[in-house]
Amino acid sequence: MRRYYIFYGILFLLIGILTLNFNYIEGDDAATIMHHALNGNASLQPPYSEYHSMYDKLLSFIPTNQESILRTIGILLSFIFGFLSICLYAKVISVKIADSRVKFFLLLLPFTIPEILFSSLLINPTNLAICFILCGHLFFIKYLDTKKRRLLFFAIALFGLGTSFRWATGFYIFIFFAEYIIAHKDEIKSLFKMKKIVEVVSIFLSFAISIVLFIYTSGYSFLEIIDVYKSGVGYAEKVEISNLVRIVWGIPLFTPAFVILLLLGFIHLIKKRNYIPIIYLFIAFIPYAVTIGFNTSYKQIITLIIPLLLIAVYGYLFLGKKGKYILLGFIFLPWLFGIQMNLNSSWGPGFEIQNKEIGNVDYNNFNPDNNLVLDKYKPVLGSGISLPTLEGPRPLYGFGKVFLSDWSRFVDIFNEERTNAVLLAEKENIDILQDVNHSFISSKLIENGYRTEQSFSHRKSNMIDREFIKENDTIRINVLENKKLLFDINEMNSFFSKKKNNIVIFSSYSNIISKLKTLYPERFMVKGAYWGKLMKE
Image (cartoon, rainbow, N blue to C red; front, side, top):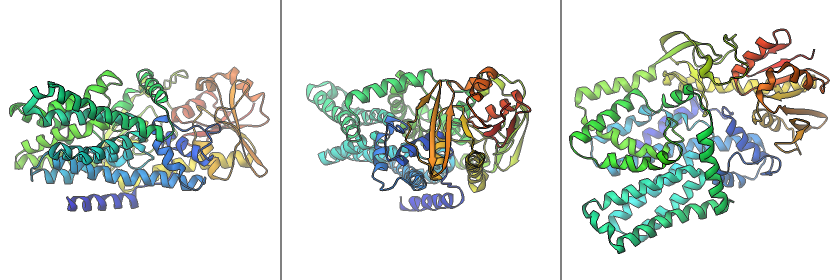
């Protein structure tokens, strides 16, 4: 396996040089670092989420509150563990399928599923979680083979530790259960004997206790774990995610090559009547079926990756020599060629975002599905259109050009917009109004030396009102009750009646900026894709 680790290392080194950018591209990242930049004071800035508790615990040991250092370490940790995760995926697959023909498939793994690479470019506690859990998986496989108790102890401990970095990865316990069942497939009847029942219960109760102990170590009680889980499932069921996002999430994960291999894998396994990998996937899918359901987000279905990879490997083994050459085409064509489009949106036509006038303006709806209009599209040798997801932008293929230059440029441009919005507010002594209570601007203020003694949700009248101070300069961040109020002229006039000057508006949605220009054509000056200045009447 050493040659594969070296290859992955060289690939990640190149991505680190050409692609990795130590600025925010995703709002959750800014919120995560803000908590620690304000000395971990939850009354000023709560942790982004309880279910990343061990990640916050880890960052709390860094002896500084400098935002830039914390941000750099946070992104670098995720990047390093992204590299380790692909090494561990390869190791688990090679242990599960001891066939020399698998080696070339493993070499192509990062190109077959580029989402593993994209997910390593931002603050992503899930990368740390899955690495510890995969290590535990390897120990558990060895335990089932040797029955050495210390191996079981390591498996249980690593699983609990990993889950504490992202609680939802606890779903991986179903894979451990599948391993146990499959290891005893030739003696199924024995599993119903009291001795075996006691063994199964004790082993998997130990896995569950390990989760609780490690999360408790990171600062949360058993009852809090239950409450967070319930609220998380409820949120996942109610949150509105556009169909566009669901599709875009899947583009760098379920690539054409990966989908073909999965289909061939199912066909091969059914023809050979080898149902074990399919049962393996079925058991792993159970927690998704009864809770949040299936989606195409790598982070959210990460506990299904190993079962999916196993089936894809059987699809690869099903191919003949000519079929493997064709597969190479399906793998690398999406890296070379992208699809660019003109949409009724600020996104595109390439891997970019720019100010555009949009038609069919609906001031009460912010789901891009409702005003998405495909005008023109064309294949290009290079990056495809950038499209938004909850994990940052993703291209419609053309992955190679994105990693070579476009990702870093995109992140730089977004960071410049945050910087320029703050500089304008500072220069003209005006406040900043946000569409929602994100941390893009507050984190930039902290980076620039501002501090605050007011909480994340500090209110004044009917809005959030938070003051940031640096020596003689003061900048306020305001957030209205609902982003729809930005388009309520009476509400905005009432807001301006409390202000002496113009205001900067910074949005986490580019379409809000386009809509504001349509509503206030004379008063609103667009400064970037995400911000502008609204003039007082």
